[in-house]
Image (cartoon, rainbow, N blue to C red):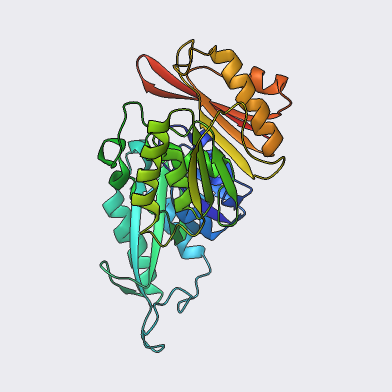
Length: 339
């Protein structure tokens, strides 16, 4: 079993994204979930910070956490030793404690000292700067989870802020949300994802950075060129971007793509009552785009300032999940996951 430290305030959304990289995900306390297995794709998750191999779960007190660790079976040598470390040397450890959203009032420094002493008594050596293994003690509400750190997600979203991209237009999506959307859609190495309303390319950048082949279309030539500029800037120099990418000017309701040729479609529908493109009726635009997405792929994620779930059902999709995410006082984003 594994413990997942969730990011953000919407645990249901974070857990749904985590399920793209883990099995049996279940929220057990605010900001905390468990999973039966994990994959290396945990590193690509936006709303999961860390995954730890679970030693045990108890109530949210330092005394209970220490008692749990006292009783746990721990291999002193373990498999977490860094390469090049003398096999005869003691495995070094660091203990990191966290009070999720300050819900418990636990003294995390006291917890680290108490748990660290248990490990020292077991023959470990402490190294706070570069340990062989890291023990995580996560306190939330009435729960404490203790486990060995297994994987951390890469937190480099600040380098891809919409305003910092080579091509910028107002309304660009935050890269963390874009990453979560492509994960929900199943983006990974070997998968092919299309954004038929790609705008400045934010969704495509995140799909590319998890190794998927990323294709984009947009009705505006300016957006197609700008998205291409952004994709070249972020994907071409990054070794994580192992798939191809391309952008083309096109109509989301009539895609130049063969039937069943893609793995997933993700798009952020225009906001308001009408599309700005040729004054199209927004309902017709999104309905047509959903029909085309159903023709070319078996999975989709659609975002809008209102829910497109009913329209998706009318176009033959099954709604697997639906989320409402607050952007600011006058805007909520509705995320609908389709299969």
